[in-house]
Image (cartoon, rainbow over all chains, first blue to last red; front, side):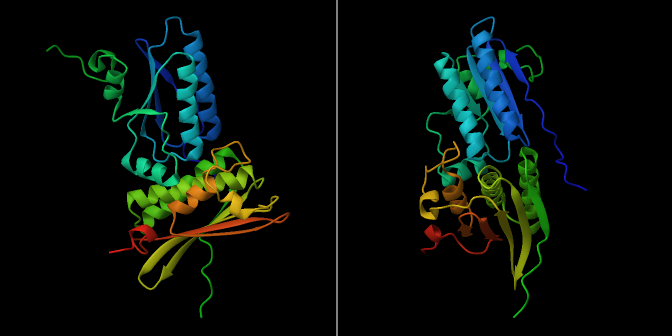
Length: 139
Length: 147
């Protein structure tokens, strides 16, 4: 038997970078996990101790976006917008963009950025100050 | 005359996890055959749409993956099979935006645009079989065919 997926279904961590929620999607995302994520982000926005200044969803590690995941991304953004929060989807791979357009899914309501730094800039946050991945160093 | 090639793999489609497994296996087979990244991504995305249809509308089923060789041409054929209720109006089901499953209605029509060959056979009450085929660097897509 070799029917088990290499990557098990697991929940996606939602990190707080200052007042921005950063979600990094990677590899295989099961439908159920994506639906849980949608629910989780929406509740985090509604119940966050300080107002959430924006949501950044990094999909640079995602190899395919089908109509299901595309719909989830659009719905997360729509939910957030109704809760007075902006969402930026960052890092879509070129092959994914080409495929989505051909699929007929151009997701016009979705704000995108080429990477997380630019997504943070779009939300009016200073990338270098907020991103913990950058090595510390004084100018 | 030669016998049709035997399926290389038969994967069940009965759960979320199976959809992920199908995507991984199609990706691996396409990469092994030498499909370019964009073509791989399109084929895996089409497979994801069709496998989800098999699961959601067909009540589950399986996909048969077959590696094809015709002369110098190599390709991958995916056959999605279910024994669900079938599609009553195929033309309507192939329309962009038409949905009975709460999705965006891009599954069938979108998947057709992502592959080179697409065949749908459905009988009400008996089930649905959708077969798609992609060739490595082979057939140009119709809209880019003109010089």
